[in-house]
Every structure is written in structure tokens, then in C-alpha cells.
Length: 445
Ligand code: NDP
Image (cartoon, rainbow, N blue to C red; front, side, top):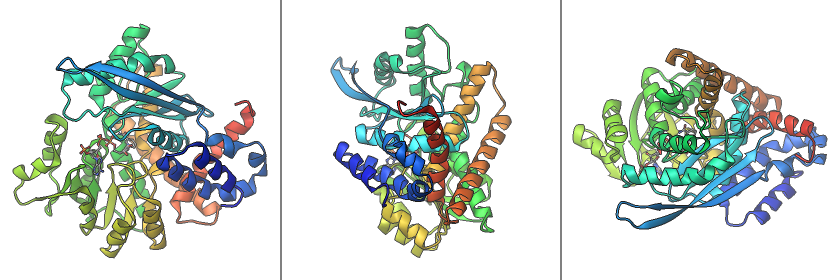
């Protein structure tokens, strides 16, 4: 970094103790250096200095009462990062690891991802350090209601439209939506990921996983390859991992491994997705239980070991920094030729460098996993129009959005002299639209 080094230094100084946020900003600014050279007017207008500073950061207390009558207190966050191209949009994460830095990294990434979808959505993210694991339905409900009792004043269908993320699925969205509606006395599309009965979109649960496969399919096709007959390893066993597995199977690949934060399963015959759905979606159990149903499969403690399983294609779909330089080197050594990021920032900078240096086809998160938010955008459209599209209609729009994202990202990479570097292509393509909008709207913005 030359022109933008000062911007990065300022971010580190102004946001101490937020390594994930620094990491996300550094990667983007490194890619944008040639854009800064080509557009001195953006440097002069402070676009780079402004885009790394959230427009608004909200931190709030979330008190709730557990089943034993004990008062618990968690911390809630909403970071409204950038509204240059549309209302703020981004998920809510409930996980004990959540802090301001994590939410800022996710909100920052969301700006570029949302821009890539071609839909009019700004970037935001929210969440809480609440741990939904082991909580009863009533505890989850009381927590979600308390969370919304503060969040409602900051969101709205034309202001900020949250969605799900880790730990927030249809159940949590339902509880939050119910509370929002009660407070506001309005039935609007203020959250996405809603149930079908009250304004949700068909294909939203599948969208991130399916979209990942559509994106990677394009990237593989560009190199004369496909998913047909390939062995795939997918980390995680939540929303993204489950539907990535489903689409991989539909495209003729064999997914042999899945994980959770405790360990991973390996089924050489191919993962039986019905069993995984039963364990994870119905019983809300652990992935280790899979081997009870399929005794020829094996379960190993420790989630990281999953990257030692030989595969053609790896799809990290669990969480940030879950795949480091050692894991990347092992994957490459074992013949893995493509990696698609379903999770947000799952690969460390060292891992990405190894993939790019070894000509691995690498689909970066902000492009490859944009299918979820794109379909959330389609849910907003359906809500505004007061109608609902069929599964096939939403799925075909999702597929064509992912194809255009791939086309835009690869052409931006080629335009800036790095045709196979989709990381650079995604950062540049996502940035250009937001930068042009910020420039047009003046400096007060
Ligand atoms: P879920 O909560 O549904 O699932 C997360 C899964 O990852 C769980 O199986 C969880 O296991 C596992 N996991 C968490 N930490 C680790 C770890 N360190 N190692 C291995 N597995 C782990 O979340 P989603 O599937 O919705 O989200 C997964 C990722 O995808 C996140 O990075 C999210 O930001 C990203 N994403 C999600 C979108 C969506 O539409 N849902 C959209 C775009 C991105 P455990 O049960 O043990 O915690």
C-alpha cells in the first residue's frame, strides 16, 4: 500500500483491539490501491477515509430473565456502516464471540457484498454476545424480544433491514419480528429471513449455500472444470453448509465432510443430508450424532482437522479465520484446486496468499456468499410489491445474480491486470459503485 497506507494506519489507531476489522480493511485497501491511482478525485474527496468509518455505531444493554428467574445481561450491537446506495442491510449474529470489532468487520464487508449484488442496499451488521446454545425456546424468545425493544428505534423498511446470521435463523427472526410489529403497530418488511406465512421469501433459507455453488460453478466453468464427480469438503453444519451440501450434490459432486465447533464427520460414501437436517434443523443437536445413524462414517474431535481430508474443492462455511496458512498448504498438497468461501472471511491472509500463489480457483466471501443478502433483497422487493414469487422464480433470479456477480468480479480483476485474482476483482467491483455514489452525494455525507 502506498497511497492508502495512511488510511489503514488511522484505522488501526482509531480502532484498537479490533484485529478482525483491521484484517478486513487491510485486504480491501490493498486491492484498491490501483483504483486510488486511477481516481485521484476519490482520494481528494476523502472517499477512502470515509468508507472505513461507520456512519453510526449503536451499543446497547439487553437484559432478560432465564428459566430459573435469574436476570442476565448481554450486549447488543448495530453498526450502520454505509448507506450510499440504499438502506442499511446486513445480518444479526448471536454468538459468545461477538464484540464491536467483529460486527465492524462484518459490516464493512457487507458494504461491498451488497454493492456486488446489483441491488440497492447499504452495508450494516448487528448482533449480541448472547449464546443461544443450550437455551430453551422461551429463553430465546425473551432474549429476542428484549433485543428488539432497543433495536426497533434504529431500523425500518427504508432505513435499516436486518436479517439472520450465525445463531439467528427463522425462529429468532420470528420472535424479533413479532416484537417489532407490536411496538410499531406496522406490518412491514423490516426484517428478512421471515417465515413464509408472514412475508418471507421462498429460497431464502437455501440462498447463501446455493448461491455459493452457483458462483463457484461459474468460476470452475471459466477454467473448463465443473462440480461433476468431484469430492468436496464443507466446514460448518449450519444454514450455509447444509444448503451448500444440497446444491453440491445436485451438481453431481460428493460432499464427504461437515463440522461444527467441536469436531467433524467424514463419510467416504458421501454425506446423507437428510440425517444432517434431522440432527441440526429438527433436533438442534451436534454433528457427532451423525455416526449413530451411519456407523461407517467417522467423527473426530477438533474442527480444524477437517482440512486434512483430501478433496478437489473446499468450501469453508463456518466462521471467520477458520482456515489458516497451514490448512491451506495441506489442502493444496492434497490436490485441492478450488476454494469457495461460504462463511465471512474464513481464510486468513496467509491462506489466501497460498491459494493465489498456487493458482487455486478462489471465490472470496463477499462475492461467493452474496446470494443470501441478494435473496434478502428479493424478499424486500416482494414485501414492497405485496406479492410472493415461486421457489423457481426466486432461484432463477438468484442464479442469474450470482452469474452476474462472477462476470463483474472477473472483469474488474482483468481490467486491473490480475485476471485470476477474484479477491481484487470483488473488492474493486464492489467499491466502484459505492464510491461513485458517495462522490455524487457530497462530503457532508
Ligand atoms: P449457523 O449458525 O447456521 O451455523 C454456523 C455453523 O458453523 C454451525 O455449524 C457452527 O457450529 C459452526 N461453527 C462455528 N464456529 C466454528 C468453528 N470455529 N469451526 C467449525 N465450525 C464452526 O450460521 P450460518 O450458516 O448462517 O453462517 C455461517 C457463516 O456464513 C458465517 O460466517 C456467516 O457470517 C456467513 N454467512 C451467512 C449467511 C446466511 O445467509 N446465513 C449469509 C452470508 C454469510 P456450532 O453449532 O458448534 O457453533
